[in-house]
Length: 188
Image (cartoon, rainbow, N blue to C red; front, side, top):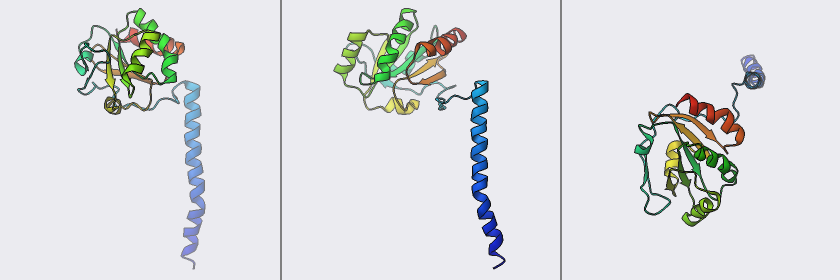
């Protein structure tokens, strides 16, 4: 009987240990929020710091060339790759920012994700087309390879073809001002 008493004591301390670990994690999150290092949307991407794998997507517009990994190599300036869909409400919200970037001369490559071609074409006809090249990822294979977990999602690729930044969610005016524009200047 005396052999089971120490085990029971350890079992009583286990919840305290779990609570202490949770508290330490919460404290680290609060500390990161105060110094700006905590990013609640910051799901890491294995693609950041890497070149995208070879891919080839059929074009959204007939007669255009395929969108391929070769389009993202040896670039004259940094570019954005934007995964989007006509059925995506946040894509509607971000679209004016993409149009603004396109007007400012920033090349944006579009990946239309799991969409119907007529709906995607109608979306662009109604709102404008900010993309220099546009591919269709109907089965979602490229999105899986890139680690996309929802649309919209935007990547910045430097002149050497390396992914330098990823943003899940709609590009808002604040994201454009605080993140994208400084990165475009940095990697120019």
